[in-house]
Image (cartoon, rainbow, N blue to C red; front, side):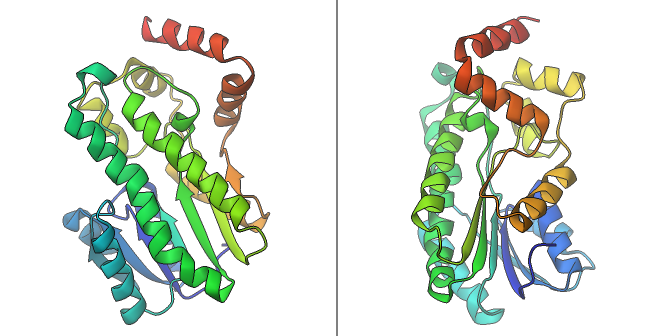
Length: 260
């Protein structure tokens, strides 16, 4: 593992990649602050596992984030790694999604990232050490129907993280932006129970869902190698390349898949 500190904070720790990252850190003897709004999920993550400390918090609430981070630092010590995996993913065509849901998506996904960064990064910069892992998404680059509001939030996260990386080069803090493709986690259930996009259905049918364990493995490898932006598998790299160099071709493929 690329982390050799004592205290880590993981958001989205109630399920998915946040849960996997938190459990792996705890297995290495790290004191892990589990942060999520889902108290039941946090209890499940921490069940019979030492070194895990539960903090129920809405990452979209800046005051709650500041209070939670202060509690973690007081109770566990300086936070030496942050893995920010918290996100929501309801889907629908833009004109069919309620306005309040669109704003909630931005408040949680982008606003939550800003809140976590502002609450945790200053102390790392002051110490000139630490890891800040931010989950953007390939969906912030590669666009598809029904994912408009979600993709907009992740495009914002991608941009914020990349600029943070450049603004803080040489600071001693390792900042990593992770841009995974569709990953086999409970987050997909939100999309399935809202509009169930055809592109997601095809990914599941074709067995193209990325393994969450493989994504976490790739994060540790990227940190060890000093990388700062991670497209964690071949599909992610190919789709990102298509978006950059042949966007109309990519849209033709997307529309063809939608009509399949």
